[in-house]
Image (cartoon, rainbow, N blue to C red; front, side, top):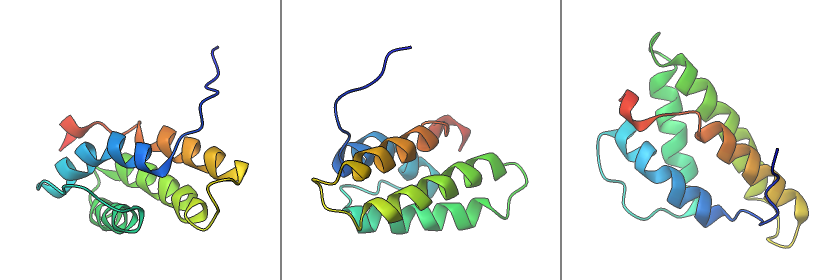
Length: 100
């Protein structure tokens, strides 16, 4: 199993997952700041948590939110930030935009 040695940035997480979040919101969200991305993710999680068919997605968003809200508080030089972003990225990668 290959390990990724390149640290993941908040902007990379946003770029990777804004298309999925846009699909979930049924609108083009455009460029997002980390705070706006977290807010949009919270809205999607809240909406999906009431749907029996989207609970898996709501759970993935909830897990990612936990890591992202912790990561946003850390300095970019803190090695824990990259770890938290990688974990959030993994959870967000479980959601397929074509499910919406």
